[in-house]
Image (cartoon, rainbow, N blue to C red; front, side, top):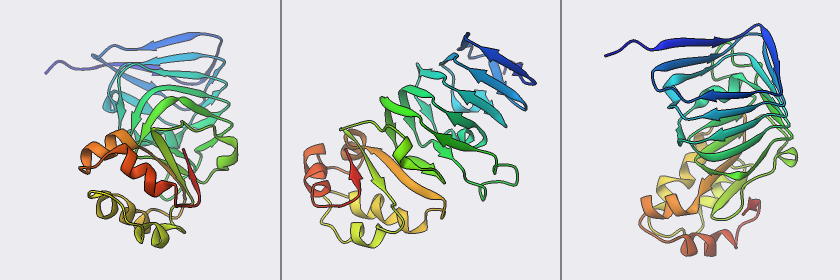
Length: 208
């Protein structure tokens, strides 16, 4: 297997530039004391090729050209006024200090996901009133831990209830919202988006 080439961004401020992180043979580090301001970051690599540690992103656009799956390291980033485009699944955003010993510096505010497609993405320790969320077929459960018992009692179609809703009872306490794609969920749980939406319409604290 070919060795990946390290591409490191750290200890600098970059303004008004376009960064293309698209080389499958590179390992990209957005690292300590890095600030990107008013930049466009094009992502076309897998989660394992993208390392984020203690970087700050202000008014940046993340254009995700390849679905980004299970990328937890957004919680090491400070995200303010950023816009996300493209597909993200199983990603974590915000302030989750219990995730790791050095994950307490992460934050998210005033960010826009309206042009993104999110599935199984969680938001931690943030004010969701400042976050612009994607609309249907995506839907967001606000305050999922407190609502978990109520949600589990709903007549969810297919296997949505046992597979998805019951998970919220064991979410970390920092979780303030979780966003799903009804299209993906319906396919995985042997139902339809319309059947999921019918139940969502009977719930409080749902954005879609």
